[in-house]
Length: 375
Image 1: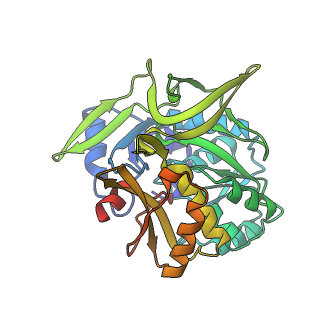
Image 2: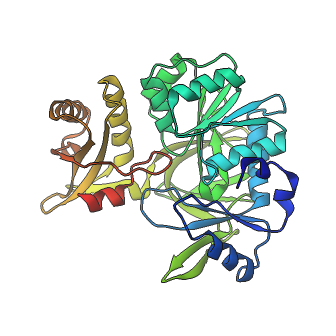
Image 3: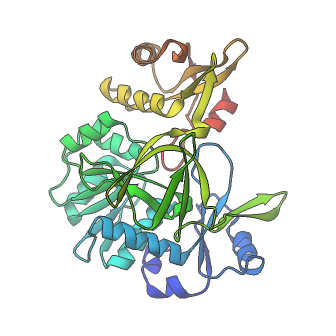
């Protein structure tokens, strides 16, 4: 669908089902038919999950939930008709679509960055259109920092979500003038759950959400903007997995929550399903991957790709390997050595594997299940 159509009032109240379908997907028409007839859905949107576990699901959100989220984010960042977005995310992901929803509720303008992502072109267009707002993923921020691109004076907030941004990359971006703000959210929450408003602040929970954690720190989310459920295609038949509004969604994320007067704050710790056990110790892969990205930046290896992945080990249960693409042997050795200097003994990367291309999602996350299959 054209970006301009989503910015029109009739899109939000036409009673139809809209499937946020990438070009290489052919499930949209049958999913829309299933939702309309079997679920009796009206004014719903469906987005594919963007996680790294390889489970293909479509998240069903009402258009009203998207607008509830958009209003909350707009209030949090004081977005008004004076603002101008540079849209650099695909609208078939909730992050890109959320920009359009915020533009609709706030009256702010949108310019879409055309073509394949290019950091230099993004910086140039930001300056050209005098953009004040953008929403990026950590990989894109990494590219801006690697290219040493300074931010234009007009930009006042760059929301960063879709994955964890390393502190080193964050500080480097801030030094270049990019006002990056960490956000935490997921497709099932129609965008953000918590976000920073200042560069040295913590992520504050938006008031539309009710959050809780269990004894292991795993987050459960409740709120009006929560998805209705998941559509899953099994043996050419659509199935529906509802999400209970009363019990909420138990995520796979471990977080730390705390209260400061009437305000609640959130700090992401790690992902429950992104951990492996080595010699009886739980190892979180997310922080190790963050360190890989920082070392690539420091060593000037941003033109090549690298990821950390676990492989089975008869003695240790699992062990970590460094997977590289397009990197020389000496550079891979430097990266492995630098990484091991920061890891605990049982975490250390024992060898390097090569692949033609490291599989990543549209938002830049390494697709670990696919990578494990390759290895």
